[in-house]
Length: 84
Image (cartoon, rainbow, N blue to C red; front, side, top):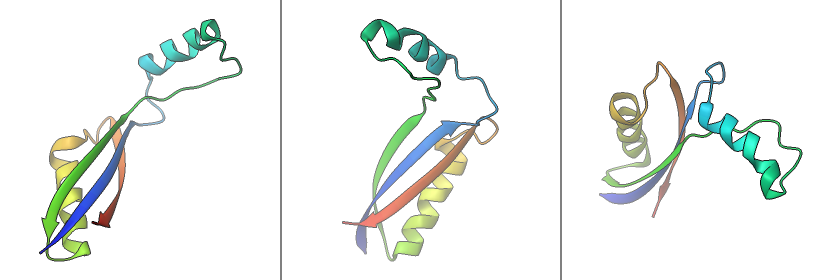
C-alpha cells in the first residue's frame, strides 16, 4: 500500500447563479479592488488515503466525489491525486 493525497475542486455549474460570488464582486471595489467582473465560489477538499496503486487511489477519490462530496446536479468537480 502507498500513501496518496488528492486535491479536489468542486464548483457550481457555470450556468447556475452564484449569489455568494455576486456579493464578493459587488463589495470588492469598497476594498480598493477594481476591475473584477465575475467571481465563482466553490470548495477545495484534500483527502489523504492509502491505495495499492495510483489508479486505485484515483478510483476511490472519484467514488467519494460522485457519491458524497459533490452534488453533480449542481456542481462539477475535478481532482489530482499525487503519491506522498
